[in-house]
Image (cartoon, rainbow, N blue to C red; front, side, top):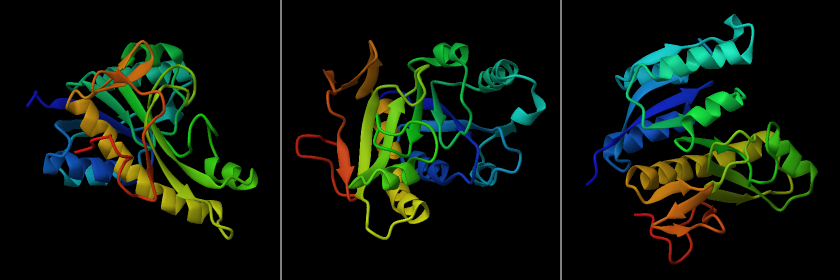
Length: 226
């Protein structure tokens, strides 16, 4: 097995996806180790999750900076204090500058709560409901300077039910987020997935249509996720 990769995770909130990644690294499902968790919010609940797991944490409070550029410079310096193979955005609610993003391409991934390219940005669940969509979901993608526009690695999908609100829909989508975020990092840390020329390569072949987990079931036939 290849050497494990060092992961630095950026969060802004309670750390639901972070918790699933910690568990997957601990169990060996992901051949990686989380070396640092950084939040832009001092009260983020995910910091306690990391500390309980013995993972070093830092806070770079965005409200203390006069510009996005100044914040990103300090954030970048903080990331580089620890070994970093992959930067993982796990509910990190800041738009990063192009200079920051390019400094980590293609070694930064994000999870976004929509079936990209649909609904980049915020309020994704309400937008899907308002549009009358039959499905909603989440996407894990490599980060590029285009907001939520990088190449998609894997997606999850759920039905939108007639009585759904943004809250109830988000709750069901989150279950799939945990599955696909873990899976994407499992693939990356094992060397099965790389980003080449702005395309996702799985086992040496370009992914033209991202594999999708539907109703938290297994991936389509022909995609080995073990």
